[in-house]
Image (cartoon, rainbow, N blue to C red; front, side):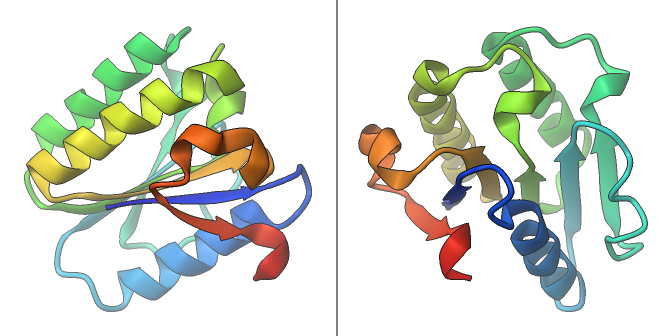
Length: 141
C-alpha cells in the first residue's frame, strides 16, 4: 500500500508522518524506516524507527533513489513500512518525476508487502495521475 501525504510547504506533512510512524512503532513487529533529508527528526521519532539521512548518500536522481530503496529492502526482510519525508527535497526529483517514482514504489510495496508513506509538497490537483493512491491532505489533519 502507498499513502501520499500532500499539501503545500509548511502545511504539517512532516508532523503527520512523525505521528503515523510513532503510532505504528507501538504496534508493529517488523522494522520501520524513516528517510529524511537530514537527521534533525531523530529525536522526534520512537527509538524503534530507523532514521536514514539521505544527505549521507550521493543520490542525484529518481533512478538512483529507486536503487537505494531496493537496497534497503534487500537488507532487511522484516520491513513493515518505509516513510519518505519531502521526497522532492532529497534529490533532483521534481513534480514531473513523481508519478513514475510512486508507481515504482507501489510495485515494490506489493511485491515485498511493505507500506510506503511518502510526503509531497504539492496539492492533490497537481498530482492527477496519483489519485489511485490513498492521499491524506496535511491541511485536513
